[in-house]
Length: 146
Image (cartoon, rainbow, N blue to C red; front, side, top):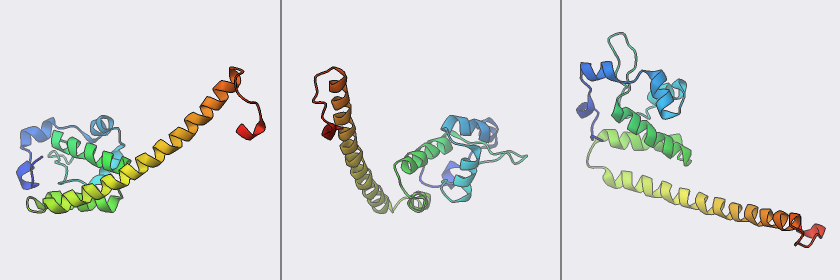
């Protein structure tokens, strides 16, 4: 992905071939309202190109960025941190240490969440094992194990 918004400016011919918002929404698995929100709230790297009649046309680089934003949000990154990351990327080269720090910090949060979910899954698997054993007639039927 290019470092600056100016270097990613689409030509008139690519604007015409970009995806309209409804197709971009379908492609990304988001709603058109969410895509508009991403743009309005500063989460996009640049304003989404528009046709002469004002219709948004999402380019491949826009869709790649939306996929990343979606992943960051799905893993619990707060909107303020996504916006901060987008600001850093928009600013161009020279702030990679700040970008790296932000992503490493978020990675630690995701790893902690993953450890918690893994622990919870273990408890669920143990409970499933108890019921499978009971249904197979092998387990102790005492109420303390329910």
